Length: 122
Image (cartoon, rainbow, N blue to C red; front, side):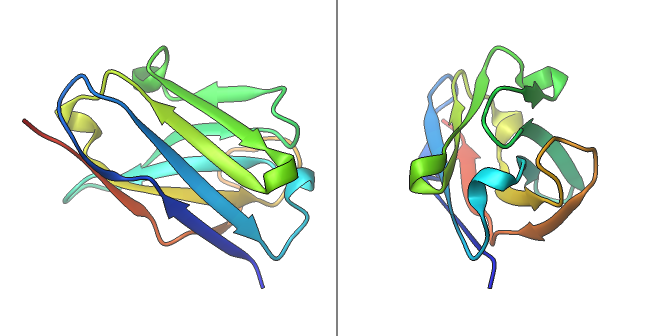
């Protein structure tokens, strides 16, 4: 079965950094695009970033550009999100999600992890 397990969340001060990881199993990881999506308290889902199957193509929501970096290590079946210059508005549960396709296609996500909590506060 497809499994996506996020880790690396926690409490960080404004301006700090965190690196999230998503361990994938149950499918051919290097044949699928992947994404990060977040949900802030009381808010809806917000797309953060996506990456195609081999990492050549990456995409970011405007507010994340220059601060967040998505990457993947296909040999380790792991997706990453490096988050720098974190702000209070970045507080959210961060989910990794598997795409139906090898390339990034908006909205075409068929499996999600359980999420990892990121709290940005002084």
